[in-house]
Length: 128
Image (cartoon, rainbow, N blue to C red; front, side, top):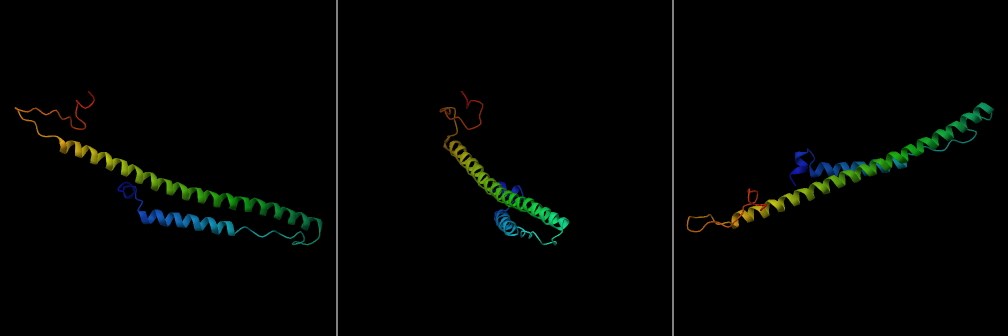
């Protein structure tokens, strides 16, 4: 659990970031612009063309908003995965350290009368 704070990411910050990204994605999705009426700018040919262009622009903006919302949701998943992976790495590292400490504690100090048959973790004879 010490790895995230060393990266400058507290559990509270990760939670706040996930909430912010989720709510921002929802707000973006809800902010899709309204469709422009075909006669919003009048009935002249130039006005109808302007309304048509506005409708095309609205379609592009709406797609961009949808893409941005999806990106924020994806980024929230990245934060969640980072947090989960760091916890898993911490758990594995802690288990490894506990195992090596137990191996070291289980070794009895050798004496001239009774040499040790114990191999400490990390010793040069460990791989033999």
